[in-house]
Image (cartoon, rainbow, N blue to C red):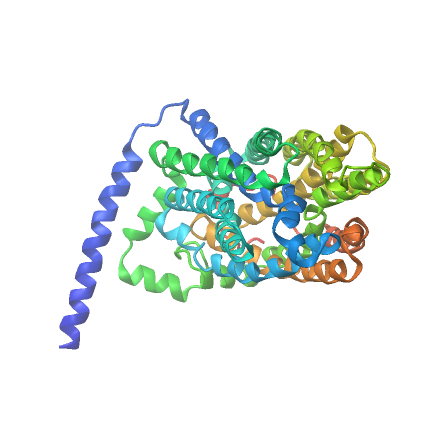
Length: 480
């Protein structure tokens, strides 16, 4: 009886796989015009803009939302600190999200690109109607769950020629970063000087992200490397699959979180990228409080102005600074790709990291001295852009060090491991901020970030092989 049940299950599985084979072969056989790569990059740019807006709006509206929802309960001086402390409840959902990321290797890039973008948009819409902290946290959980997956990065890496991967990625990322101009534009148009209108900024951003997801669903196609790899697996026999599971090699396995961990910790290259990248990610605290640092810097200048609150005085200055933030960020994120393809991933990592720390220190000094908001915005954007350029290179090296069938799975373990470093450094910053107050956000950020980034440099440079000329579809991991 059990044998009949087992045979029936096997037969049904084979029927499903055969239907999938027909579907994938039909998709792979569809003609692809030479201009498709440009069309694809245009769509990916829009998706990346939506991703960047969803990622950065929380930081660029940080002090505003803190004043609207948290200050009435906890007070002005620690509103951001308390928001950060309570916001730590969303951290487990980041790790939960990575449990489903390996499904990208099994069911395709396109499906999850659409799901993730749509999820971020709905999360922003939930925040826009929040009238209290619980609803705000619910929306934040949704956005946090869908942000980390970056399927658009996999699209770019699997579509670009091998010798232009970093350049293509950095150009698209730079264009997406310029799209963050949408946030200060919405601040200016929807909110102006009235903090109580903050929710309209989130509403407009949420609508944009949802529309982007629906547009991608209609226009984008699956990547060819995934189609070929998935077909190879589906056409293999049960005996070949069983042998692949027993084999220590990874080139025949299908994606899963367990397979990603096994591959990652078995290969020296990935182990050191995880450890070195973890320390680099420790420095992410410099991307968390820049809007608050700007606000408090300009608010301090309003101390002697009768009839004008410090926050009201600071609001237009910060909005103007944020208009230059994407310019500075896009500039450094774009040049890193050209540098990385020309000079290598490791030298560019060092250059971007040093630039990030240097510009961030200048930004803090300028904010406290009330320099012109456009200069402060550019310095801040340059610092954050350089930092993300540095971590993006680390992600590119991850992708270049793994086979196609496990790429998303290994990229899933990267933020899990490196995310632990981010959680610890973020927790330390939150505790110190709650003890010392919002005014110390800049000093706390620098003190936490600088030593960790230096350690990350040393580990990556000394122990990781250069991946600039690796061919993605030939990577097996045996030589790493």
